[in-house]
Image (cartoon, rainbow, N blue to C red):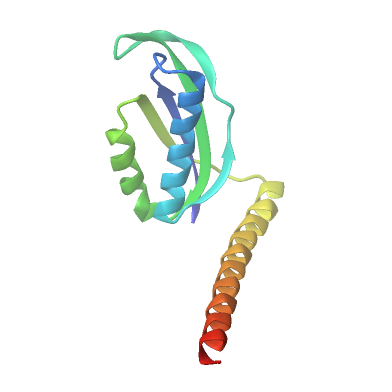
Length: 134
């Protein structure tokens, strides 16, 4: 998995709350594809240096995540379908020494969460079977 960052401009006609919702939607979409969310920048409204889709200002947001390189095309397809996103840029990021350790811890934490969910579900099934067999 590689570390990527998506920086994107969101239509200023919507509220900041709705813009945060779009950012959250992108994070969820990345996780659905199999990526691991890493970091999110706070959304800020910026004046643009030149108009983009006839807009002179936009919400600027960014999300960092881990994803397999072959799945980036799928992310781009989904981003293009979002009508509220004026423009986006996906770049590969290099991690600093301290970030590598945090990343491996984050990946292990994701695995633990999945295992905990699986164990809980197994316990529910076994309890149900024991109850029904009595």
